Structures are given as structure tokens and as C-alpha cells.
Image 1 (cartoon, rainbow, N blue to C red):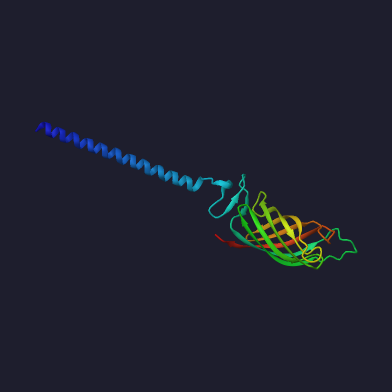
Image 2: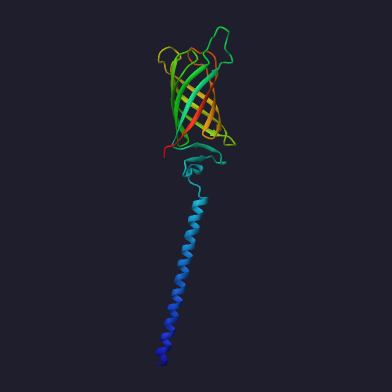
Amino acid sequence: MKYHSLIKNILILLLLGLSISTNSVLAENALENIQIAKSEDVYSVPDDHGKSKKGKFYSENNESILEDGRLFLQINIASYHPSEDSDDDFNEFNPGAGLEYHMDGYYLAGGFFENSIDKFSTYWGVGHERTIGTDWFGLGILGGIVTGYDGGFSPRLAAVPYILLKNGRTSAKIHYVPAVGDVDSDAVGFSLRFDMGGLF
């Protein structure tokens, strides 16, 4: 009987020790999983220098660039021709509208406006922009095709760099427009852009 009781007590102690050891391992694994999840949620750095779940991009020094999957409406307003001769009478009121679809650091653009020689112009292109040191100031460039400067359709290649001034969902653009077609003077163009919200 003494041996039976001793064996029974030894088995109970072994079972208790095994149970404590198992619970300790499970607790450590659970704590490790929580720490990993928290670390991934807060500190992970995905591809594209930190593309977040909301579609915002960041450059290597954490400057914001474009937002992915967003639609913008651009309203073309006016232009100024600083080298205009007295013989020239360029139209500097240039109403029009266009759309920009931003994706993966670049955007597609297309639209129309009344150009500097009072003709109907259209444009299509691919652009890229980024903010510089702050969220409200940026630089960009749009390159593509513009029509209406040689009479009729007459598509021409053009590249238009610009300054971007942002205030919430509204941005002002100041473009440098090179001489093209029948317009022999460079110009400075002005437009407004409105964020139409995320598509995804």
C-alpha cells in the first residue's frame, strides 16, 4: 500500500508539473503572437516606401506623394503670356475642365479648354507630382498630347511642369506652358483641382 500511495503521489506531481509547463508554453506563445501583431500593425514598412492601407504614398524621407486610386476634377481658368508682343492678342481667359486619376505614384489626365488663340483644345497625358517638405507645396509635370494649336485637331506633344499649392481637398496649380503651334509665346497657366474622394 505504501508503494501504491507513493507511486500515486509521484504521478500526481508529474501531471501537475506537465500541466504547469504546458500552460507556461501556451502563455508565452500567446504573448509572442500579440507582440508580433502589434509590431506589424504599428511599425511595419510595406513596399513602395510605405504605401498605407488608405492609399497614401510616402517617399524615403517620409514626404507625401500621390494618393492611390483617387479621382480629381481640374478646372482650367486663365493664362498669362509675359513675352506677348503688341501685335499679338492672345486669349488669356481659358475656361475648361479635366479629370485626373491617380494610381501607383503616377496619374492619367484628360480634358479640354479654350486655348490662347480662341480655339477648342483637348489634352491627354501621364503625370507625376510630389510634395516638397510639407503637405501644402509640391511640384509636378504632365506630359502628353494637346490639340487645337495649328488649326483643326493637329495633335502635338507637350510637357507642362507646374507648382502645386494644396489646402485640404482643393489645390491650385500654376503651370509653365511652353510655346506650341501658332502660339509663339510661353505662358503661365492657372487652374484649380478638387479631390473627388477615394474610389477604393
